[in-house]
Length: 317
Image 1 (cartoon, one colour):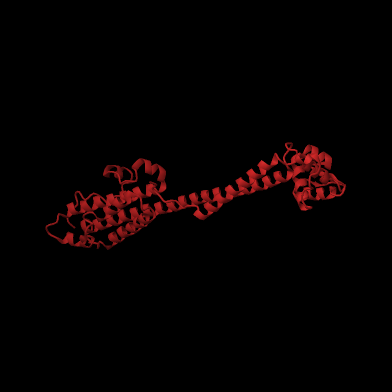
Image 2 (cartoon, helix red, strand yellow):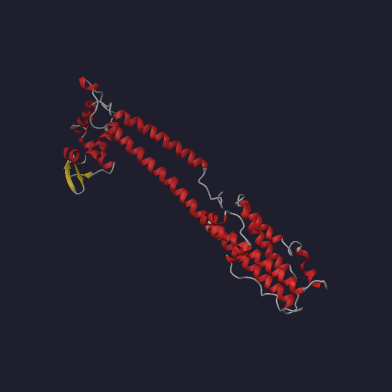
């Protein structure tokens, strides 16, 4: 049961990506399977065709177009790594590049010549250059696809982590504002005698509740959120509109009533910080708490002392 619902890579992207990967694997397997059955005479004919006088200049063009070499000083020479090579030398020293350029040239000029004679039924030998070029293109496409999917997933994780951090900061800030509003409210009734209405305190309480509600919508399987939300309706906040009235009741002990408000506000602040901690560290948080609201002692240990001044020793205003 994850603490958070992370931003996911779109399902369609994963489905199409998987289909493309499977298709490329199937095509690659088909090409690889056909390599051993390619007639050796066909491969020899391909090499002869590329090195013939008619196609030598075009082979140079193909090598340059594919970025395998640069033009030499004569029409049928190449420069590879600063060294001028004939086409035969290029084939001998850089056989893979030669096969790739030759395969591209053969395909571009009308395909492979048909094998003839006894060699047409032969097998074995080196792989077909055309098949190798095709496999190289498929592998390049596969690498790009994997990079795109993985990059999108990593970006999604980073974006989600940044959003969680912003939500956590907002909750902690709202928790501090709630504690400060409670301190001012209690001081106004027990300290300076200004008797500030409870509206400012209740407004801060509603702000925290709105943030918790947002997290409930985002993380419906986070069990502890419901318990955290319930703390904001516990006495004496079960009837918030009556807070100011209680102070005027001659049968109410003001010091005791202030203590109840003070302790409950501290618990509301503590659960707010608990949710923020879960947003910052979802994996560690899950294993440590099981997503359930911990005991009051553990809650209190995870939050700075933001309570209002103790009501002990305060007399009526």
